[in-house]
Image 1 (cartoon, rainbow, N blue to C red):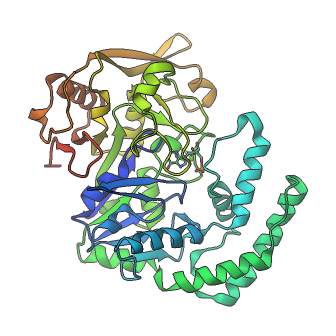
Image 2: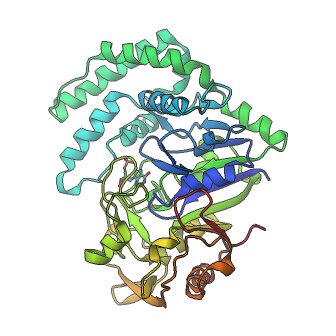
Image 3: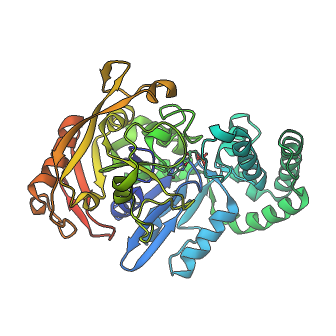
Length: 433
Ligand code: IMP
């Protein structure tokens, strides 16, 4: 069963990029299946830091074909910038390596203008989106008026569609939100140029993936965002507009469940979230600064895409249990264990107390979630530096106990733990999964 799925088990930013990078070495194809350039994946290789938004992190491995799948929304200007940045650093993004599904939807300046206008109009109840036009692009898709990437191979059809699209959205922008209209001719001209550059990358993903499956080639579905940002299974309405969960990988790439092998959930050993919405384990003050970092290091808790400081809190096992269930996780990968070194004690949220009742299920409604108080179990910390450990036995006993506690509570094996930002700073817990 050659399709493995790697997903975020929390609110995104779990450190998926570096594990895609690690697993990609053995893959024939790595495919992004949802979201757009709202994602930000940081991969550190030696002294080089790669920040990727749309292109799968597998691109860094020469032999891997990377696919931007049909479930994604793609801003062509951003994609071309990212391609140029990689090419400058000697990484090939030629059409035989980087493929764009004809089914992916295009993000236009009208979507970005709408995202900004809608967020501004929401005022206090703003979602805190990345303002990349993600929601409006998926809205158009669901309303069946979206622009699919396949249009990039049809210059006349594209010009016509862009013109109609901008004119239609200009009405909303000017009449509902009172903001300036966009110039359809200028947008169409830009898209004509993007089309010329991107048309050679277009692919029918069904042919690419199903021929690979028929040949038994290994495929990795690379998640963006995280389970708690899923449109259906996340903390609605403070979610993104796509499906970062495992089921989203199947829809987003056009693959059935029979082909799925491992479903790997990546989770930080504490919790972070950007944007608005309830966050039961949220910390403020000194401990928050301690977990977040100052922002000086690229791996500190500041958004890769927006630069916003992330909200942080202790590890929330209610959230992770939800992720285990809705994704059928076969295993967990834990990241940033090194950040916890030096803490005397580490609280872990094992349940919520809501209206006098204790629950280990994530409540489906925001009103309920905002009434939840974390029930903590406190584990002993460790003083030692863990950054040089590569095997479980090389970790301090209390760090091992922390990992075992997570694994046992969630009844899910842990396969890897990262102990620093470098590519090799990974403890292999189990490699038999
Ligand atoms: P949107 O995806 O830009 O519409 O934003 C919706 C919500 O998802 C906001 O709270 C964003 O901060 C959050 N979000 C979107 N992409 C990411 C990501 O890659 N990491 C973490 N949060 C994200």
